[in-house]
Amino acid sequence: MRRIDIPFDRLVLPVARAWETQWFLLAAGEFPDSWNCMTVAWGGYGVMWSRPIAMVVVRPTRHTYAFMERHDSFTLSAFPEEHHEMLDYLGRRSGRDEDKVKNTGLTPIRSRSVAAPGFDEAGLIVECRKVYFHDFDPAHFLADYIAPSYAARDYHRMYFGEILAISGSQKYCEEE
Image (cartoon, rainbow, N blue to C red):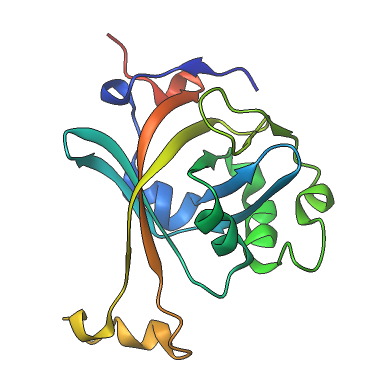
């Protein structure tokens, strides 16, 4: 897919829909030899410490967690609607058990600013360098609906990544 460079302040992304119904593919590690990916539906974009930031959460039980821990960068890729079934597959399968990316037919590609790959079919690729992490603490849950998400007590680790580069189709770029 043809993508253009997009400055963070010109990124157009309906964030509620992007996370809740469109999802992202999170990739961490070093392309081409040692990386993994998983579908993520919880996260956010914003500004922290006067820098553009992407926030993602990963449970320690996920195979991608080890890659997030060992490596200093990650990517978030968004895909056109027709890839939703593939994202569902990538979110339900583990890279421990199979080459799930190969099984989807996706094409991993080298990123410009980070070691983790993006994907040729993606309409949007956000490249991030980790700058902070924090483990969720159930003692800090203030709403009753949070705890049921952790029946196995596998609390997420939240990662903040400084956005170093964004590339995407024109629909993600605000006109000047």
